[in-house]
Image (cartoon, rainbow, N blue to C red):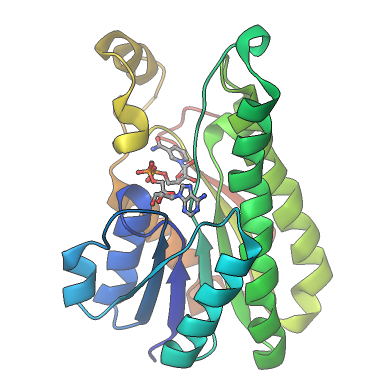
Length: 237
Ligand code: NAD
């Protein structure tokens, strides 16, 4: 059965792989992107790309209106959009801190709150939030990012409790290090250092994150809510 799926930040990296995975199983896929052009690959495959900055609730609302008009009620939401602005604490400005929180945590709140309207009406919804192993373990130079990603865990678990009786599930996927633009900024030495601590001895491929997300929104996972699933090659155990 084809469902209406929305992936935020679906234009590249992990989000692109997630959008691709839902398209492959025949779902109606919409994705948001903050800037640039939507990837031709997704548009050619029939996905609906909507430009939307999740730090602006009016843009979130407008994006939802367009998606609902074209694809109907969103049944599956993958809140994937996120940013980093790494800095050691003493050099981290208040803006470095609040802007990361505003995208990763409050931005996710904006999208989830808007999605919930339709999910409550439909008495069904599947929500997956993309956190990070950094939110669970912490990371020097990433206090803003780690706080935002840890915040997503409390957010999801609270909503799992609040909305379980309405048949809406909230789960969190916490990737380890994945080969995307976000990790390109790391030096070779930093990459080697990270990989040496990963029991599986490598970075994740984006498809390995997408597969777990897809499972968590499938009927096989109907009884899973409030779960935090690390997909980190064993880094966080
Ligand atoms: P990426 O930088 O390639 O993609 C980030 C996406 O977020 C982009 O599509 C971008 O358009 C979108 N985005 C950023 N700010 C936005 C805003 N204000 N409004 C709307 N969209 C916005 O990074 P990625 O590696 O694909 O990361 C995807 C998610 O996975 C992020 O939440 C990230 O924190 C998380 N994650 C990544 C890794 C990794 O190693 N790459 C590890 C753990 C978690």
